[in-house]
Length: 158
Image (cartoon, rainbow, N blue to C red):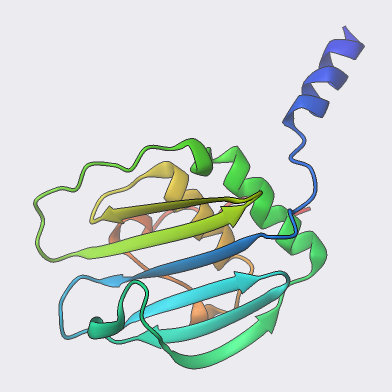
């Protein structure tokens, strides 16, 4: 019985963060005259920016700060991406809400890039990644959108 528990623990282990790991997350209001926040994580470096409406998506933001994540924090973020099923999730259907807010996250790992966006609706694989990311960065850089407003924080990283 003990060996089954240990086997299950081994199967759930995520493994180390891949060398090509890169995350870009952006969230904020969908209103066209409002800027949104973006966080970009490359290795243990996290860069924060504000992005004007014309530059959302692939555009360039105005830098607002940076932070260094510890190796264990980066591992915790990567583990959450895997546990949330982010890389295998299917893009949710967009609702008809024209205002509200949105979030999009793009993750590259092991040579594969996955991008998911949600608009004014919860979507657990994306929401969990943003909540974990928010727990690792300063409050002024955290991402906010309707679906996670009032959501309970994830347990602290080990």
